[in-house]
Length: 404
Ligand code: SF4
Ligand code: SF4
Image (cartoon, rainbow, N blue to C red):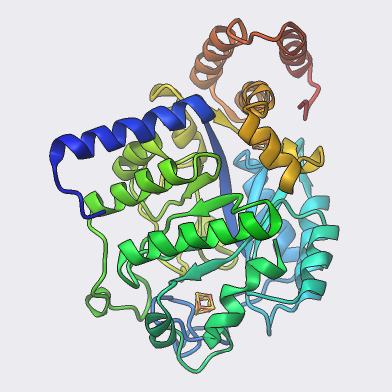
């Protein structure tokens, strides 16, 4: 991360880009966040939802969740990331909400995978989440630097560094970049991953790379380690090289330009059309809302999808793995042997076609169809190629949710 030599840096970005291309091809997975409660018992210095901020807080009822989900489905989303707090939104509420989300359908839209971002919790609760068919469990360590951790989390439930740090030993991630020295954070993240690999045979499934943003009651001047764009790109490239088989997620905190660069040499999943406010999708349709942080990429999911197509990517709404039981060690085995590509690519093509048919305009449909036709003939495995060709025909005939 200290590297400044332009030539060496370009070499590093090039290697990261090649690794990304060889493992993930042209695919980019899309998702959206869903906030169901903004009550909070913590006081994280960097967050707009901290308990000392006074604004009218909300916890969505199951009916309100249904409404939000329907709006997300209308945008074509299939994969959500759910977030909340442990006191006002106990595990029972989260489980009930998961059930509501999975059962809510809007015309032929449905949510097929919900990843859950809740506070560090007990083994028993992690088991309950698994039984509720979550995709992955997400937890932000925020910072690995203990003194910074303690300063950033005053007088709150979250203030136990160790309980938080060991959460992945109990569950089976990300850092909020900008809190502590990024060199320390990246090294710690990699050591943490190594520890999980040694202990459980599986490291992080995905790593998120958020940077601190402006939010209600948050003054950026108070953070001495804010990352420049250049440093941030280095972080992404280094993570890509260090853990090639771990997906990297970038949210709409970053603008179009940063997302474009980061996709080139590391990022594999991006959110689109996001609202980070509770009930925010409905409020956005109606007017104003308080969000957890400001987003920088405000394009609609369809705009993001068209942009990805124009940039030469294959946007994917695939949610197949957890539904097929490809999780944990099984998933990592497939990822490391490269076999997963036989599933990701066909699923990306079929979900792209499905999206274009259901939510795209004429132009999107034409672009998607052209790309799908170009890519199908490149599938080496004959049986898989046949499955995809037949799948596309079935999709056009009205069948949905076809995957390997
Ligand atoms: Fe609360 Fe989470 Fe924000 Fe911390 S980061 S103040 S726990 S909502
Ligand atoms: Fe992700 Fe699995 Fe789909 Fe590949 S096949 S995109 S790894 S869910």
